[in-house]
Image (spheres, rainbow, N blue to C red):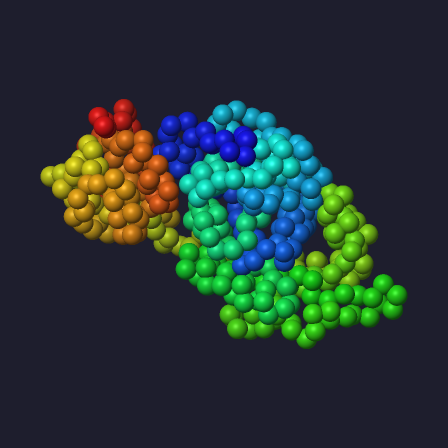
Length: 399
């Protein structure tokens, strides 16, 4: 893929969303490494969390979706590499027996070119990477997300599904802490659990006398942020020139000649993180809401010409219907119904027929689509979908 090429979606957005859900559900836990600003060492933290989990014997994937500044290939010694696979499957690069890596840089191939993409293009690339990367069985997927709280972090947070949480990275000074505090609010708004905060560049240990020097003064930004938000400070990484040299050489903290202090601080971060990611599981009674266009109590063959939408709430764990709400949709105009369904909490639409452009608009609103369903009651269709028993045929849309 070039820096301006459109990603291939095979003309079936609903299939991509189903494939993405299956891919994400097959992963034990997803660890999103986030920050409200760039330059705080987020990629360093992501790489070393992934490497340490792999060293402990877990099967780990490291996904770099920083579309405008993918630095993971350099930090794992894979600059200039490309991924192989088919149109429907991307094979990540294998670093060792326990660690695999995927980066947008492996798709572009030229690490000197700027990535010039607008929002919809970036969403499509993120969706494709999450849906098509063939990780195999993973205990953990560590995701190095772009800085900020814009389109890319929002898409990632919404697409990774259940069993996901965030590790937030800051530096001690107040200007960084304020931006990362916004990231805490972002996680709360998208209902993404925060597993803790890492303060990077917290201090410097003198190479001559081994004295700890607080080069940013007494800010202690990570600790103050943790206290202000009620979150845990997982640990503090010191400034260590060997970290930077090791990253340039494709080496992790465990592999390069960092100080004993750095090793100890990294070990503390992993030790504090492990109980959180090992006990965090899919919430019992977690639900999804399936929107189904109806006429006379049955599935309407075209979603835009229905009398009402049935919003069927399903308990994902028990695969039972817990509520059915009938809502009258607004007039059918381009782009109106996808946003309306999303605003009413819909995660998925089951339809008899739907045009390709409408499917893309639903996907952009983080709503999956299944087409080709036969007429039946909304409850029966929802239960069949949850049990992977929904029979679908030809897209009935004639538009």
